[in-house]
Length: 422
Ligand SMILES: Cc1cc2nc3c(=O)[nH]c(=O)nc-3n(C[C@H](O)[C@H](O)[C@H](O)COP(=O)(O)O)c2cc1C
Image (cartoon, rainbow, N blue to C red; front, side, top):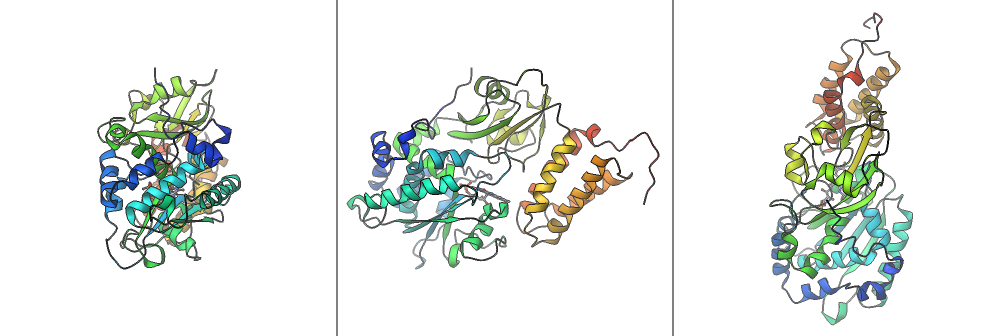
């Protein structure tokens, strides 16, 4: 029987958790106080020991990323919290920010202490109006109570947090587009290298971390990095939040130990599949990861390596389950329209290719496709993947390729009539 393991979501059900006094009463800032007894390098070492990997999608080891920040560069170091959360199917950061804002503030403080940063930014998705308000209030309260600002708790550490609202662009979740947007420029991704750790915001060393990654830090330092590392699997440590939607009885945000069984997660934690619907497609990590057929889910575990071995990814943990009442073509078209709309337009293959995909998928839906159109989809996808500045291009073709391959019947152009090539 799989159960939730609530570490980050521990206090999520308390309505008064947004109040600093209650946050502290329930153990808030214990992690940060422990951090203050360590040197910044020791903090980075502890994060490495914890095995924490970035929860924004790529799963890059957090401690390692931090260690790339040059020491004594003579430039300020910035910490940027990526709260853009626009990946279809993903809504876990929202819950953290709306329900436990001080957890994020404490996480940012820990990151700033480790990296010698005095100024942090939260780049929040523009549509998250309520989360923005909750965070604003929390930052204000923390400032007034000595948990933010100059000489925090008399420690000599000074950190300020500025919150910046996005204007509704998915691409601004990509870290370098986010930095450009934060600088007041168009949200175009930058060519890497240089990586943000060396040359990021305003040309200064910058660490960008996801909300969930930062919220894990107070938990790790409170319980101890070794204890945290005991959870999960050998290479996927700790817990992970999943935003679950689709044909399960209890959709929502759940936190489980990494490495739990995928089907067990659906049955035991998400209440199982709703009555009279046969499960067909599972997308475990947001719209940018390959889809699994229901039969492929058998025996798969929810961790970075197992999902990769199964041909998909953990991604952002946007866990979507679709039934056999959903056509893979409709799903594919829906995603393709999203990506075509959200392409920033900087790279030609992505800008033009996304629209071409929508056109062909729409023709398939309208039953007006031509023989050769399926091959054209493949060719367009090959022209996009790996040929763009940022991974958006790969993200856009991933659902198309996997759905087309795994559900060919849904894309059939055998209409029972003779179609004429153009
Ligand atoms: C198109 C695109 C959109 C992204 N959107 C987000 C997002 O909304 N939130 C996020 O944390 N990471 C997002 N990422 C990943 C970030 O670029 C970056 O890897 C992440 O913020 C790093 O934080 P982490 O190491 O804590 O995971 C996106 C990446 C791409 C390519």
